[in-house]
Each structure stands twice: as structure tokens, then as C-alpha cells.
Image (tube, rainbow, N blue to C red; front, side):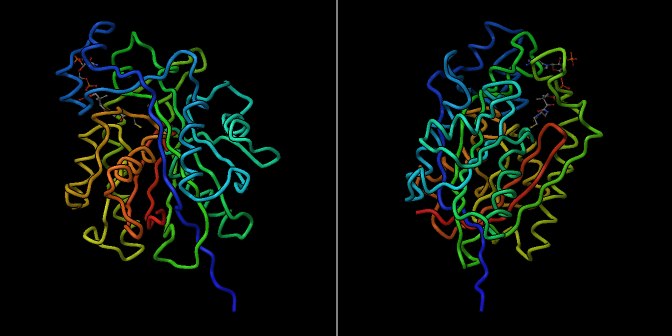
Length: 320
Ligand code: COA
């Protein structure tokens, strides 16, 4: 009898660059205020990479730790995938190939995906499919963002919202559903592409924040309800709800609509701002480092981003 193979979250890690930038620091360069940013978004500060630090440098640091925590060697990694909206190079080479070479991995597949802030959920779905097909045993997934490289510091509508950082995870395999990535749901609708984009004539993020806000709350609440219902899991069964960290008001609105106890909602947006594809793994790592996250905990993730893209996942943490 064949035993079913499930994909499993074996480790989590993150890396945050050193340079802390407070709302007060931003007041000096753009027409904004600490009070406005805190009230509208919950963000109190963020970290920016140095000029000579690229997304691959941030991703490499997180990936090293993820590999170590998964108790494997870099050469045991079968494939490397990176989600980023701030790649080292505009079109090629991919940030994943650069990270893999820095890790000492050669002659293994490596590629980037473009799904903006939903990147980590998309990565989980790809890794899950490859592992459960039996094709690979260990996949390194990385969300790495130097968002400061695509921010227009004259545009107060966007530049106050984002931060830099990276998160990484090793997805391995298990035979036990209670150690598995139970489900991943991803979706997109290009009808809303113009709400959040880097236009062809400018390298910077442009956003219609208000419209994104309304769509995010509605879409995420539906998506989370659907994935819970489909898997017959009640909000009270969840140990941690780890939403994409874009805006405290979006997170709280979704939390209320889905009736998740606020003590289970992981919040890092105050400290790091929106780190796009890195935000969910950075938030998971936050509770890992605080020793709150335990092997066997059931996590609910959701994300929303440019595209528009969105997604959610239910998974047991299987790291140590
Ligand atoms: N500082 C001060 N004032 C600002 C500002 C800033 N940084 N940014 C915008 N404003 C002003 C606007 O110009 C506007 O002024 P006006 O009323 O005189 O025209 C006012 O604040 C309200 O702007 P609005 O865009 O309606 O505010 P909002 O309540 O929607 O909050 C966001 C703005 C961006 C915080 C909010 O829309 C949001 O978080 N959207 C989702 C963004 C997001 O998460 N994107 C990423 C998805 S992954």
C-alpha cells in the first residue's frame, strides 16, 4: 500500500536589515505625520536595507537560517523559489538563482514568481504541488523584498506603507496530515491590475489605496471563511492567524468578520510595515523566535496584493 506524501513546513526564518526608519524620520522627507500613519495603518516604523544590500542579500540571510533550522544541508535543497516585487535585476537573472549560488547550491532549479504581496501563499502552493507529486523532497521558498528600491519618496500615498526584509522556509514531506500543509488556496483577477502597479514608465509602486483597502477586506474575509469551511475547521481550532501585514485596519476588519480571537492574530505591521512577499514568513518567524510557535500548531494564513492576487492557507507547523 502506498503511503500518501504531504508537503510540510519544516522550518521558518527571517532577516531584517539594520536601518530603522521611524514615522518621524519620514516626516522630514515627505508631507506626512506620525499621527496620520499610525492611525490609518498601525505602522510605527520599518527597516530599510542599505544602498549596497539587495533583495538577494536579505533573502540569502533568511534562507541560511531556514536551511539550518530544517536540519538539512544547502545541497539537500532540490529547488529554490523566490517571491519578490523588488528583484535584484529587472528581468534577469532571477533573484532565486543569485540566492541559490550564494548558498553554494549549483545545478538545481531556481526561479522567481511575481504575485506581489501574495507571494508567500503562491510559493506554498507551488512547493506543495512539487512535493506531493513526489518530484522533490526539499524546496526552499523565500520572500525577499527591498521595497525601498521601488518606492517614490515624493509620493506620501505609498512610501510610508512599506518596509524591507526577508522570510524563508523549507518545505519537506511527511506522511501525517497533522504535520502537513493541509490546504492552499490562490487566486487572481487582472481586472484590478491598475489599482496597484509599477507602471511601465516608472519603477515605483503606484496605488489606489482606498479601493485596494475595500477589496482586500471583502476578498480576504470570503477567502478565509471558504478555506475553513472546506476543511471543516472552526476559527477556534486555529492556534495562530497570520495575515499579510499591510494595514492594521485591514487585519482587524478581517479578524472580526471571521470571528478569530484577537489573541490569536499575529501582528508585526507596527514594527516592519508592509514587507510584501516577506511579511507572512517574517510574522511566522516572529512567534517562532518568541517561542510561542510549537510543533503541531495549526496556522491560518491569508494574503492580498498587486495583480490583484490573493490566497490563504491552513497548515500545521512541523519545525522544531
Ligand atoms: N500622510 C498624510 N496624509 C496622507 C498620506 C500620508 N502618508 N497619504 C494620504 N494622505 C491623505 C490623502 O491625500 C487624503 O487627503 P484628502 O482627503 O485631503 O484628499 C487623506 O489622507 C485620505 O486618503 P485616503 O487614501 O482616502 O485614506 P485611507 O483611509 O484610505 O488610508 C491607506 C490610506 C493607503 C492607508 C489605505 O487606503 C490602505 O491601507 N489601503 C490598502 C493599502 C494596502 O494595504 N496595499 C497593499 C496591499 S498588499
